[in-house]
Image (cartoon, rainbow, N blue to C red; front, top):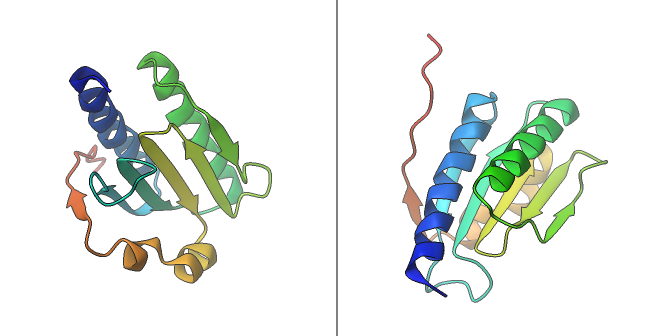
Length: 124
């Protein structure tokens, strides 16, 4: 894959994490999985505060993807609102409720992955 697409994936991952954090999701992280996962380059993991808020975050990230010309290849869990997964191939977004995030503990599973820093909007 071209370097431009990979750079776009990283920018998309960081921008999507910013959206999640700015929409009041909790403990948002971006994991760099390049060279560790054969399936994707970046995971975004965040905890939503309600089903409605989680769907809003998913919708906002999907809109960002449209603007950045990132194709969404899959979406799961949207109606249940416990664990919403958005699959953009190079970037996979996990929006959990607190119980599911604790249960699946993806941070432990990918504990050797580098966490990327991203900017958030300061509303204070």
